[in-house]
Image (cartoon, rainbow over the protein chains, first blue to last red):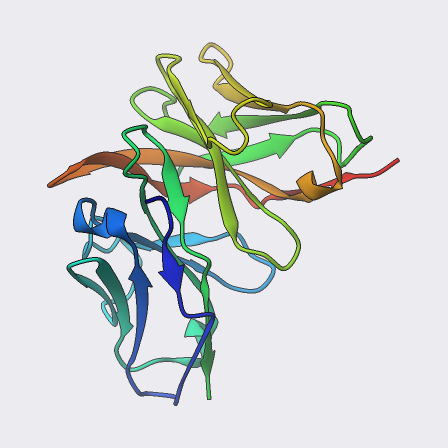
Length: 109
Length: 124
């Protein structure tokens, strides 16, 4: 399957923890990648290979996975974390094809 | 710090070919996957395809019959051509560098550098 499913919206109180999930058959095989997109900006990479952060990404962002579900957790959410978050993986069709989830809008209350 | 800069027309007529070029500076084009990704207004991200520096390509199956991605390593540039466009192709187009990583089941690239994006409108 090439489909990755995300909840459209999630909200979190300032300073609290939020988990964003991504489901898909390909996640049983491939580790997820996560991107953050603030309004009007290009996406930025926040997690790759399940739980690796690029330099400059705060350690309040972490990734995990179990079975067909990958998760991005923001521990101690800040106002600046309000954004759209997209998961990504490789398609399981056998072709070298990249797929994105539909995105989750995170609102920090 | 790698920088990517797109160029190309912001308005394309229906049935014509959309052409964009991405210039890569402050970094080597070798050993990376060079990608095009788009985002229709108010929608999510859609991967269009990539070209490896050696010239091998992979395309989104839903766009494969209309897409060509090419590379000019001497100019540190890669390009996108999307033929027979319709209003549904109106989107912000991004170019991005892909760095491959391998997990248990295989390998695929993550996108670690993006340009700022360019809105392309398909309209007569």
